[in-house]
Image (tube, rainbow, N blue to C red; front, side, top):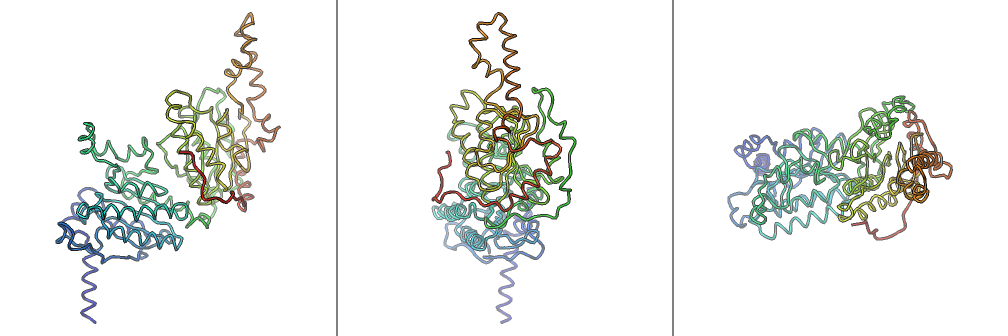
Length: 514
């Protein structure tokens, strides 16, 4: 028996070595941690239970007979994050560049299945050179095994991908199928085809960082939801994000012990909207006064910055926030903002997180380019997402709510439960000047002083519509409130809506606008 124990201990010790001391030193020289070091940062001390530590690839594989390592380039298993059960895996770049193999697929698929059956989140720490070329089509098929499980887990258990190194080719699709992608600035990258292939096919010269670095995916492509300055920060962001999410779609997100008074008023909010309609303001100033102090985690902060999405807490409960951002493009909705808002609403809906919407939007962005690129179908995604969502939904119109943007941004018709407005709200079909040009074109042309007549009609239109009271009269706004009392109003509303039950008609699935 002792001999058998010695063999087991020796094999386990070898598994802990990864690709060996030299490869580990190279990993550290790149400013990167090893797979096991990353898992140690992610998981509570002593909680990790590894599966498949001794698995190795077939020794007959092309050119790899002398490169068999226990674990085969991925460390997988279960542990706890802040006391909560999770499944986790970390690709090991020190073992054959972390290349994706059949063994990796079997190990990751195994914990995906167990996580789904157990109803626990799964977190993947990605650092791989892509498919293992030596395995040929078998390596590509191995990706498919993981992809189908990503889809089956979608909307059932939270899936978080943390990119901590290269992620290329087929490897990018698994993170793209998960709920959230977190990247580390400077060391992580994502792209379908690398710089060499692009140069060969198109003649374009581009570096890895320019093609698929964190800055690109944070601000331009929208692939990355969160970006940190380093690996430690990326892992901490994943843990923070997990704190807003439930274990699965049948549970509610964890509640924190309230630390910010529920009845706290914010007098600053009464002065946050400028008197001059042409002036902008940062909607984050509102969020900071309304929600539990220092609880806001913005998602997609640099992408489509004319809209703000993120998580925060109200009296300790997790909520999702959607807001127009007047400080960027006047808060107008465009294609990217529509996609960003719609996806975030759907994430909140599947994980039982109430949605609070702050509206200050002059409408959808006009222009030939937007129309040609399909702003109609992209804008329809917001409408679809709000109408489909059955979680509690509350809206607050802070200033402008014009035309189709008023309807799309969580209006009562979108099955919003409670609609508030500030006294500064302006709810109308369109701006006053544009309305007068359409409604009173004949009168203006016939006037001896067209400018004076136009100004008078504009004043009349503003008096009639550029306030929330007409909408309140006809029941489209439930209550006009003082800005300072927004926090306690929201807390009371969500306390009521916490037991809300609403179901959609039974169906296989809807057809989300493409």
